[in-house]
Image 1 (cartoon, rainbow, N blue to C red):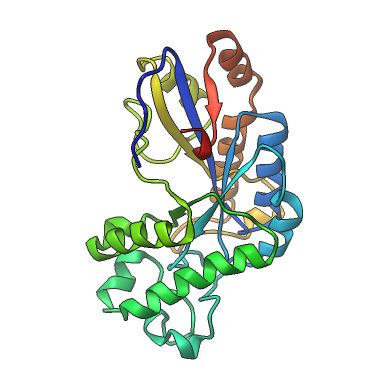
Image 2 (image 1 turned 135 degrees about the vertical axis):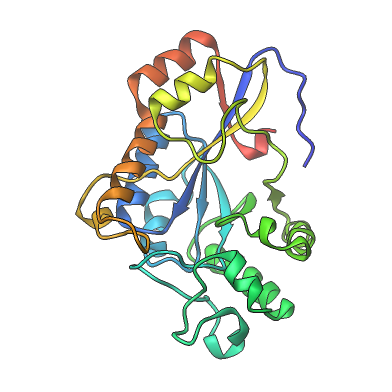
Length: 256
């Protein structure tokens, strides 16, 4: 994807990942759009709260939807596997029938490439079946970084499915990885020259549902607190005031 850099102000592509993970996440993402600067949401077809995500996020005027292609399952709970029958894509799953915990672990297991493409295509179809109309596609846990082959195949998949490939929008200067909260965003918005940049978060509420989601070796409640801060990154009154006063333009993928 080629990004037009000829602009006289900051254009901020604001994206929420992991819709479908939990109802808490889906509701927080909707708040970030309704009351904040969020313009794009990436939805995971294999995740347990997909149907709830469709009721909250499908067909919302002005919200750009993406397919968050998912070939890994990192949490202690919930966990998930492919949308296809496990018997149809056996090289993509562990002995328990779930995805590996990371894309790197998947590709170390030497998965069948045709099975990967079949599952990725099925995930896009699943999103459409429940009511989403995806405009772009990206990947959960940066699958492209784990496999040069997949990066090329993903580009071809996007072209076949008529989806914008998310790759190519730079992060805010000095920023690495996922946004951390409103203070983080305000700090990094102070630095860049006019242009187009991306900010990604995983909004959710710090509630009981999210407190039950954690990584191996992590602590219950840690993810909930981090993702609540990412929710506030898109909705905090200080952020809204800054965007209004400075003319920062939150944009969708289809506006690049």
